[in-house]
Length: 478
Image 1: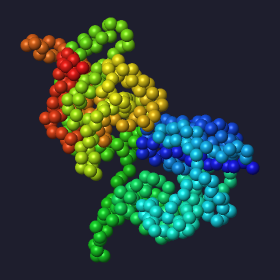
Image 2: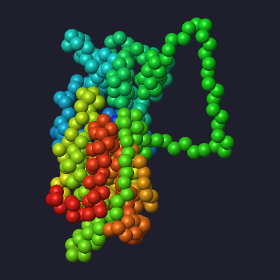
Image 3: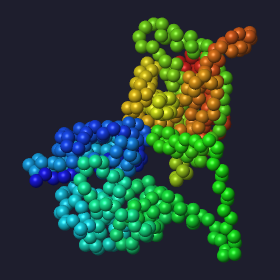
Image 4: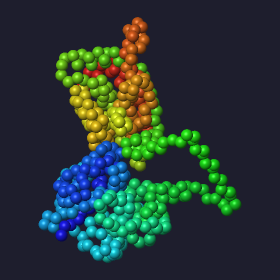
């Protein structure tokens, strides 16, 4: 008799808690091999093909294309033959997630007893999902059995099966009830648990508004608003603001999800947490453009202007390391970093993304040119991994490609600074005491005022401008 194993959406790394199904790569009834890609998903970072750690026959898929699933929700089930060995991990790694051997097989419990083999175990927990200290081992084991069935039931509510999935009991919607004093807390989203934990909300006191009493993010946010609202006296009238009139002509609602949602969240967080300031300067880039032309005239791979600007940035950060840092708000410390992982803005059909060039400080102009080209191509193809989109320590933003001269960039949280480069255009300029037409560019630096003062930021920006105007200045640091 075949054993049916359930494969859940794995942790894709980098703090991602959900993904959208873009395209199924297998059908129900298909035979799959170990580590065969079975579905293509889109996270807030990139498009990823998810491999299945089991080999066998696909018996069910959960979630249609376009469905957004939380990490840990079922993706599909695979029937593994009776004579096949106990499934073992392939050892392959997918963005921080490794398929590994499952825990020892748990004893199956008859239907109706509240346990399901092979599903996640939630321990007897307090409001933050932590095990209650001193709980008897037998009591914990009993609660673990109940928790497995509870987590499995809620996961299936979050990701309904598509056609041909095995029949299951129809879900019923119960009135919101608070979690019992003992047993599992009906929460499957790690994001909701973190929100509650960070704000000291006891999840056991909440009545979930989701299916079967599932506690949703809105329930936690409503509890926080209720705690923050001042207590009203019985005599105080409740004044409700009038509803805003709907705009004439209707409109289109565009969900903030995927890359656009991730960008919105990150920019909003940057504005909330970082006291930023901006300084800018015009620079004569004529000599830099001549130097680039001379480099490309000798043959070999062409050097990009972005690579030269990146090389100038890394040299500047070596002189002003305060700008290659981040603020640890909990420890109230500024953390200066030894390596420069340089992010750069790239516009794609999926929106603005910021790929990261690792160890940019150790690369020459030719290596930087090649890496910029590789990452840009991957960004436009939608194949960047989350690891290639995170971990930056400083960002270079060339908005001159849009035909604009200046901007005040929003810092890419949690970095401390971003250098913006406008278009390079012929302008009147005083050169060696004479009015001449030169190639002029505006440079702007937005920086976190907690890591340094204006003197440091101005010193960095002036150094960058000097290297742009006289590339020979850069030779002193090579």
